[in-house]
Length: 404
Image (cartoon, rainbow, N blue to C red; front, side):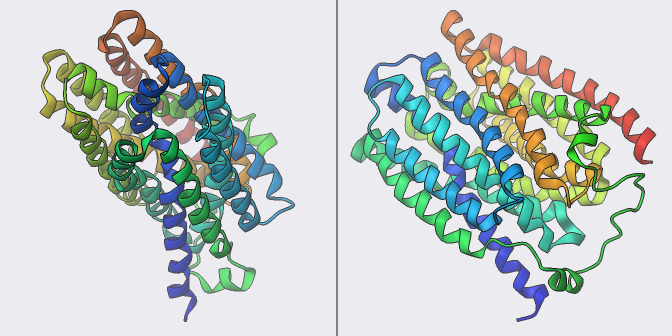
């Protein structure tokens, strides 16, 4: 089999690995069953998701550091073991801190570790369309909720939340562990057989080491963009189900269906945004993403205030489509601005934005608990979207100064 065909095996394998790994995003499905089973409050359960996202950045940083000594295949095996242990441990919880330790810390760290491994290795097989390759990979991560969401909802109804966690340990941990055997980066010989790309075109510097990257203003401005857009998306991922069931009075089954539809929008969007990025580049793509986020936030607020479920579904799909764009552009922008050889550690620094984005769902949960509804959290999403667009304007000036 020629290298141009064989490389798709590695891309598809990465897609499948992300399909299993994305179960960590299904917290919106777990939240209410956990609350009902143990009598915990919304701010307590939201903190578990916050810990998961926070530890995601820890895992990503570990990949950047450990990849100098271990292969991405080995690190992905460790990721699989951690996810399996974390979900299995969640099957024995009896106090909130048990959930924070298992789902929050262990699963979150495992996801971050594996996420960086796949994004560091697989796009190198498609150098001429790296953003598109990233989009294909991340589509698996996003579609995970669409694929597993209804199944998880059925499992929870039939065997309970505790047994569902244990089942996930076997399915997700085993699937990722098997996929680790096909994760590799191209050798020098294989790289020479792939389409060649002039990676220096239009750039003053390339393969910027991390110590230099963190001294560049353009990195920190972009960091702020990812915090704003990422946090905005996580609020809806975390709270979509309770907004629908408690605020718009729909059934849990219908809520799961809406989440699945939005996840499909998220998944398809990752490929489409990859194509957009490869065609239009950094600035135009970011402006489009920011505009879509803001429009979606307005729609969510209006639909909730007017109690119109149809508008909420459309707005939720648009927001998840926008979230897909932010997810795809994060690794793509880091590759574009600072190079692919230094990508793993550079990207792990960007992944620390989870320290801040992870706070957004918890803040929304605290506000909801204090006010009894989601009006203020949804209104704040509009403000965040506008601020993100203004920040992208600043990024544009810095980009033109350094790279054009």
